[in-house]
Length: 305
Image (tube, rainbow, N blue to C red):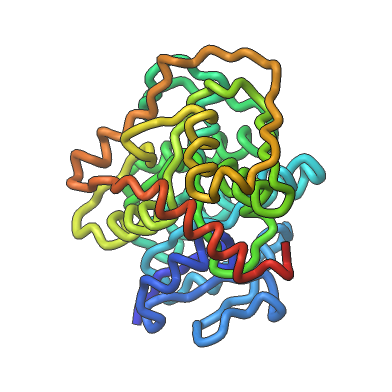
């Protein structure tokens, strides 16, 4: 039997994704036995190590690569960031040819296009990495893109905009995400701190849409290789997001909004997702529902907050 291998299965996206695919059809790649996911076929591999035996690919047909060092953690260990976000992928491509893998889906980030964009961003926009986290994502994207032209296997690069949503377990990393962070601070401190201009526009995509898009590419019956921007139709300013959170969490509970004096103009910003919409996928605006879901999760897990 051939399987789909999912790396980063214990992460923010991974925990939600594995629940939508038959347990009989997937293998989850986890760091060690402490990270074991019950009721799934687990492979224990620490991808931050230089020497890795790739024989776990023997019965694998497709790969969904979610594993990544977070942007915050990458600041503390440049070498580990390079190994996980670039070197492992480089070796994975090489070994995938050997084991005749049919499809690789890599979850990348919209941050590879750079900061403070005041224009329409398409898949052809120039890459402008600004730190190690973004740089190694951009480099691994470029490695994979070169393989697309060789037509050895189907390679899909999904560049996610700013994800958000309630996690399946209390995952510390997810609270660094902008909307999650705003909700967390509103719940715990009754304060939201905006570190840039309140009118700064960004594109946000909720977890349900993210999972549906990954599954769309995973299940697609034909070759569909390429780079795809993944986001919502509409972008919001940080001020608009804060107002939505206030309405969701009741204004009277909010004591303060801390604002930055930075002024950044990006009113022309647009994250173009027309390439995925042409495939028939329509993102559904669940902004309010997902924010309510985050607060519901925080209430249920208040002992961890």
